[in-house]
Image (cartoon, rainbow, N blue to C red; front, side, top):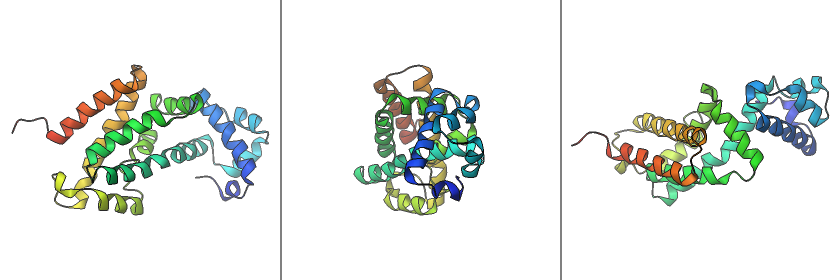
Length: 204
């Protein structure tokens, strides 16, 4: 998380720093990104950077989490739209996520995050669906889920279901980018995967 000094900055100065960071992280993945390039583009001394963030990872995951916040809220909306059907809500959210990136820079930022993913990056994406770390958001989600559709007896049993779905969604995004699939192809593959989750893989 950014330090308090970052949030105390005037909005225009925060925006300049964020824009500079987004440009750098869209240009190259995190491990190649340069604080020197960020501070030069933002027009601030290097020492000032460390007054706002611990390191470039701190800044990077702040930006990534901010970008994914909208996805978390959208999932709740999709649960309402689909009457608590987790699978249909996830498919709809996944489709919207693929088409919601408004420009090339944002797309490159997300692409670098996915193609050079670490466990921490995967967690950030997973929490759009499996928001167990955010108690209030998780509570809202549980209230919206139609429990009659899923084979669980209590709320805690829903957690591994969400984790499995989130992991599949994350790796579908990676597969789309690495294989250069179209949005339509990626969604088609994802729907097949979700149907397997819904119906199971063993004959009954």
